[in-house]
Length: 174
Image (cartoon, rainbow, N blue to C red):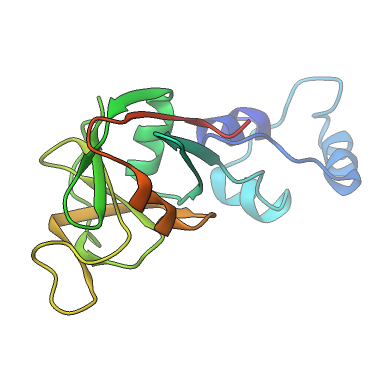
């Protein structure tokens, strides 16, 4: 696949430098047929591409996040925009999505503030920002093992202002 298709496949925009354009001309990829590259070559030669960012609006709160390179992040990104309704559980908000995905090998139930999780059994995004009813001490313990798929770029503590029933929209940050 060519650089542009490969970059779009992982959900981001190609970022080309003068070096990339010169390399493309050398390979005959600029202004002509595009040469094939694999994903590793895309990331090492072109310096990867712009990171995928999303915007979550929950009630009057706006949270920006950057997606990680995981199957769950890819699945969520493909279905954007998502419209849902907020639910709360202690200092966690969660909301239903149309996403169906498997539990990943590094899934866990204790998360750090700022990590966005996906609850596989509930097909829901979960964002913990403090203790939940089953936390031990100050930890953020979710109800089940979850896939970590994004990192917040803004303060998740603002989610304390979100009420059950608030409208939630998740979309690309562009």
